[in-house]
Image (cartoon, rainbow over all chains, first blue to last red; front, side):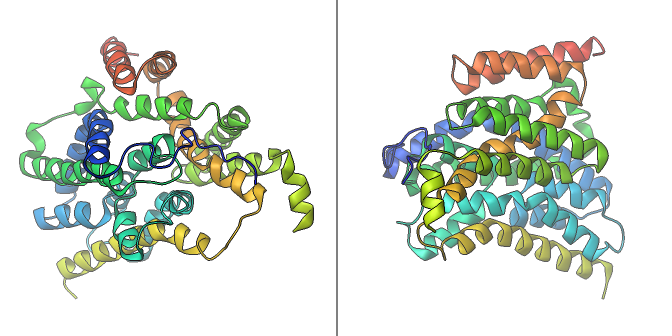
Length: 247
Length: 101
């Protein structure tokens, strides 16, 4: 088999148990800064749309998916259109299918119930750190060290936004929304030694931008990602061609 | 059904749909044994491909401040840990936005 392009090939690269948990908490903390304006803005907008405090909180607790919570809000009215909102949310969250397919390979040693529980917390930052740092076997300690602050932080921030609402004002001024862009930049560069990283980046960026302008969000995520993934599959080389011929 | 009940029903449905996307990929993939290397290569590219698609419009189609910010964050990321990239780039973007970029 071709050597898989894990950046830290050792098993349990982040440490297990408490040490893994602490490492996870340490990794996720800087990202939490970016969650603050995101969660506040979501809750403020939701309150303006007329959702009750309980509804705002339930949505954060059950979905735990910032981007798609925003998309659902944009389409929200009274009564809310069920299928359009559901479809839009599925379109934004489709990337999780890809995430869980890749991350699941590192969780084969987890019990089934643990996996079903763990996948609930599969958000972009957690996934990115797992891919970047966790090696071939993801330790539960590390994963929940990422997940617990993320999930509890998301709920706390949502509650603060829902309660204090308009007093918070426009968070764009502080550019805290840019934390996510900086963070994605760091993550993408962290993968630059993977095979064909540059062609994949170019294909995804071009495909994503084209879809963004021609079709509009959220489709740029699925279309841009597909362009990159197809490029990676097409460029896969070495023993690949032989073993493919054999299958 | 009352408006409120309908809203709660939808919120629960959205939660279930989101959870389905989070277990879906693993449920499908774990049915297969050894994977074709081309499929492995495609899976290995997923984090780069998805993150790039998410970032591209934010970086390149959301104002000059963001373009500069991504360049600054990228240069710092080549040498330093993540929080340096955040601390170094966010104030730059805030300053540029304050000057109307």
